[in-house]
Length: 206
Image (cartoon, rainbow, N blue to C red; front, side, top):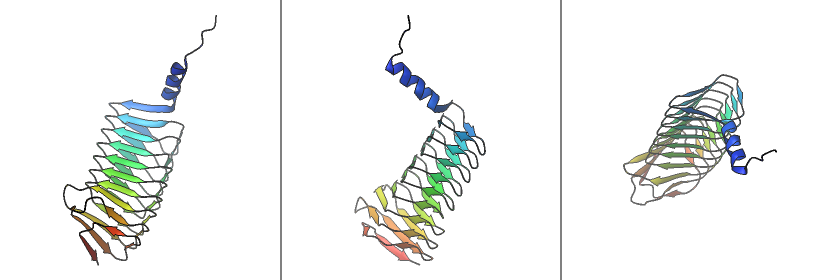
């Protein structure tokens, strides 16, 4: 008699096969590798080598996600860590850091959003195709970076500075949720915001 597997059992097997999980250790994807999985490290970091292609998302719990130049993957999430994207990285979705920041180098493309809670966002020549959403962290958009959407500051526990510098462009606006928040906008060396400003305490054009 042939016993049929339950749908739950099959789903469990598929989940295991589609994930590359490291428990209490870091995961290293070597340069140029093609990985049809979603690397996930718990109590460790995820390291993606140069020009590696990841079909899934990169996740680190209690660690960070480090991506070298030319790598390609779906999304990134770091909890209690940061996401560090080198030059010419391609992200098909959103990059998120909780209790950590996000940085992206020249030529890097993030096709959806950047989200950071309790950490900074720093772009150095990168392109974000949607918006940046930040709670309790500064924002630096520099070196001819482009943000197609807006910058949203959702929560501020201490003074925050948003700096648009060195020919960078935010095509949307800068919106602060709470009008009592201390948020300053600095435009320097040709940095521009073409949309509306809401609840910004001061604007400095240098």
